[in-house]
Length: 154
Image 1 (spheres, rainbow, N blue to C red):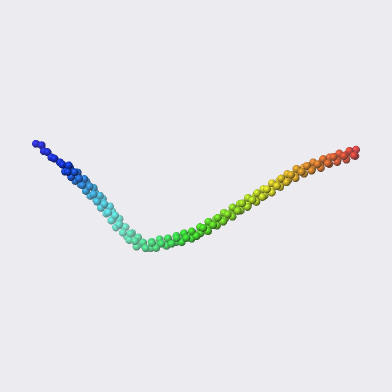
Image 2: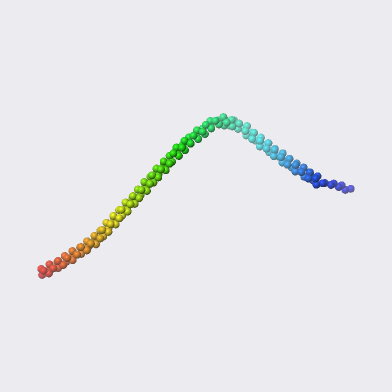
């Protein structure tokens, strides 16, 4: 005797969906169990640090006053610096301009001294050449004069 069973597509889908539902249910149970463990650890952490949190909350107004005071001091310092920076920049520009002008004047002075030295050297050269010529002429005149005087004595 053979037993025949007929399963319709509808029944097959119901069985598959039931198996998926059971799998999702098991997964959700595991997630909830892990979540419960995490929440238990968070609760223990809060209980262990309750005194520190209460202390921090108790001092929070004082901390905020200190933050406000520091913020005011920083704002005052920044205002002071923002007023000083343009003055410093202006002074630096003035010093730079003065230094540039001084360097330009020094360059002009050096150029003037250089031209004076060149002129002096050229004058000395020209004068020494003409002095050499004068000395040669005087020497020739003296030679001629000495030779005439020696001929007249003889």
